[in-house]
Image 1 (cartoon, rainbow, N blue to C red):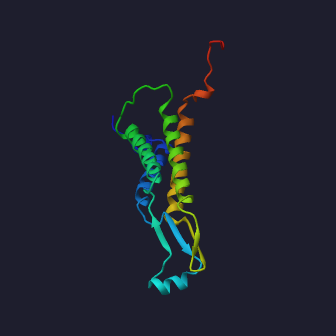
Image 2: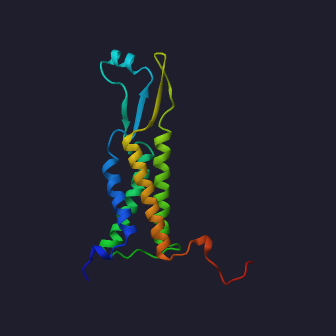
Length: 170
């Protein structure tokens, strides 16, 4: 049976699309940027604009977050397009994908906001924070997590903490 795009669920398209966008923008060097209060004085000393991007999303544990989110997108694509059969585990695979997406998002957000401490240079302050690609990558990561959670909820899988047992507690 041939796969038709209309048969693919919107949540699957969302997970795969967000993962593709995340892959593209995770390499942009302005995931974290640095800014200076006295940029005019520093630019006179350095001969250029000292403010700008200092890191991509692949630095430190942010790279693990990107890998987790890309893996979620890859597994979703394999399930949709590859007719893959995953092994049986005690919890549902949609819950695993939603959890991995949430963990990857948390790692990316933590990396963007804990890159470095601010300080002082030549009497002015320096600060680090997410750049334009950092905000975009974090937005895509949150959206992928939302789509993964919606896919979990639509799958009908029971969460382990909500399963009822017929056995009385001991």
